[in-house]
Length: 236
Image 1: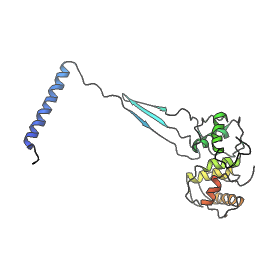
Image 2 (image 1 turned 30 degrees about the vertical axis):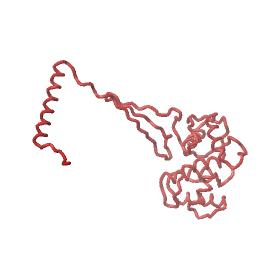
Image 3 (image 1 turned 60 degrees about the horizontal axis):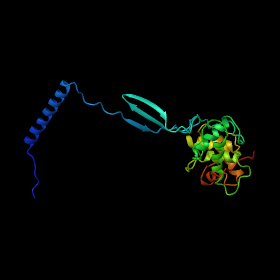
Image 4 (image 1 turned 45 degrees about the vertical axis):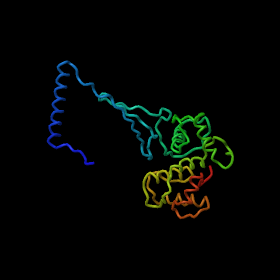
């Protein structure tokens, strides 16, 4: 069966007629004091997350609602609040009931590692203890001191944010910053500046020697394994 087509001239006349009809209709509506209804307000949900860095704040989802030309931002999740300072001069032993900046850092690391959500309020209360218990449930045996955050626990939690790419002297960026925090928590002495320099290489070597693995100052699969397992450089 042949395909039916409409001549171009006929289509142009039809389009012109339709346009005239629309103009006439709008004129009638205006004359009667009736105007088209305004478009309904639109809303959009946008998730934003701060990059993890030395002074990064806790990841927070936000919802931006646009209505009648006005925008407002409100938290999409009210269960995780507070600013995070993940780089501490030292990562102390914590027990349930503790309070302060170190507890806030702990709560941020628990959220980072998906053991939360935990409210970042600087109080080691029941919610934080429950998140720590979820970490402990992955241990091979019962923890000797349930709820205690010692060097090994700090290293384990901080290192959960590490990837798998080999890190060596000359590397820079957030991965190096996380590595340096973990090494400091493990008992190493080094700056946390995101630059893998001689100081970081020495701290890596010390960590490797303490855990009886190849001490070459390069962070590869074996070193990652011990970091993510909570290995330490010195006991304390």
